[in-house]
Length: 120
Ligand SMILES: [Zn+2]
Ligand SMILES: [Zn+2]
Image 1: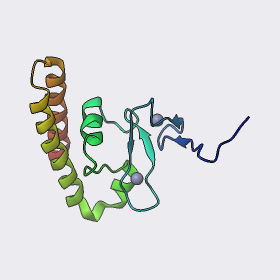
Image 2: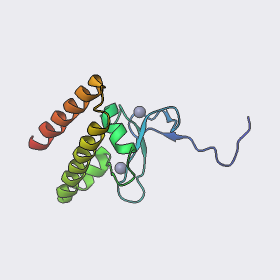
Image 3: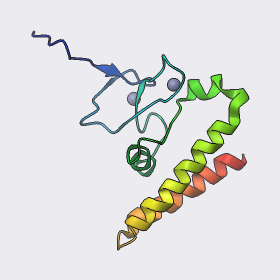
Image 4: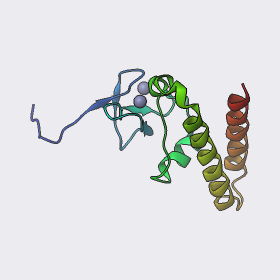
């Protein structure tokens, strides 16, 4: 076995399986320093649309369930994040509006999921 110094295998914060940032669709938690864990998109309850939105812009932040729980007094920041994502989805939606009906539907579904979550 050869180990190179850079061989860092992260494991998903939920299923604890290895996360391959190249071949897997992953999200990284932007939570307090020390988290920054990687998650499989599906394990984190995000669909591919959310993943696309999150990975399309470095300014977008996503927080894992633990960090969200730890941040409860600051629920506003979660709201802002959701708003950001929605705004970003709107933009993506405009970009892919040229005939990708399936994609379009998936955007719409994501939006309704987010809206439902927010009003719950
Ligand atoms: Zn996982
Ligand atoms: Zn986290």
